[in-house]
Image (cartoon, rainbow, N blue to C red; front, side):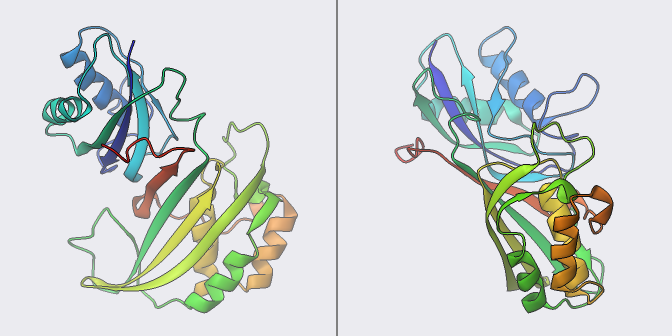
Length: 257
């Protein structure tokens, strides 16, 4: 059976998350339903990572197996037609080797978190950013972020329902960037690692927001990390500012798509 890699963009607001659920809409369920219209029968797709309810993706990656050979461009076009009106789009498609796996072949995942700083309610960016009303100290947040880089036991920044076998992870990048936008000043958090724990990025951002607001110091971030205790974590920020921004593989399978 030919295997196809799919690069997927989606707006997470109407979904209960990536993973298929029996009684709630999911991104996985939407794509599998679209595949069933092209090839009748049950379909199960695998993704590079699961995203929670309300979380978005700029470049999620999944793979599917089909009975016949498709031109990748025609497959993406057919899926996009069947996905309407769901806010899900196949932005690239490529045929891959049968042992290529969207999750297990991945070398790293990249996330973006957008935080909007303004008092007026967000309109155009509603549902796409986490909004705070006060300005934050970006430099202090970066100092705090640097305390989290490297290999650590991240129990403090791990959801109590996380199913990962170990809290030990290596964080390769946590960059805090000030960005002027037409809607107002934003802080972008660029986060990169081979893999993540459940709610790890949102726990980082919620904690660093406390540093930016002056309620925590960078030393408090170190203390929280070393506590290895979920109760030591700062607030977990809401999901709507979080985006799965990309996945890296040994070879860019979409380079020729």
